[in-house]
Image 1 (cartoon, rainbow, N blue to C red):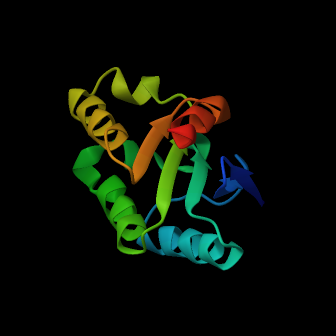
Image 2: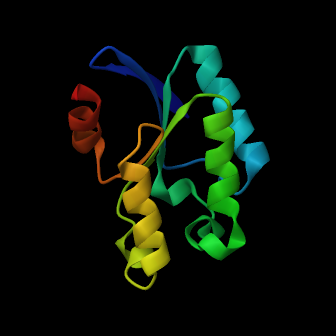
Length: 120
């Protein structure tokens, strides 16, 4: 289940926490297609939807998924608390920091934080 919202004139596909696990490129392409069909510029995915491998950078799952979003010029927001993943991984902390400096993929705590980011 997903909902198309407009936040600061930006169409955003907000995905429900319940639903299929996002674990690879095929899942990413399905989301990108759905979002594009609905006219969204960003897909907001709750952290619960990601396969655990996404948060282990050595698996390359995060890179593969994010690359698909980049290829199709669709923004991706990983929404929710990922501290249990970043507390033991300096590489993941660095990756999140790098992503959040860009305009393509953001790791944000909640919808209110997304509203602030889209305002600027």
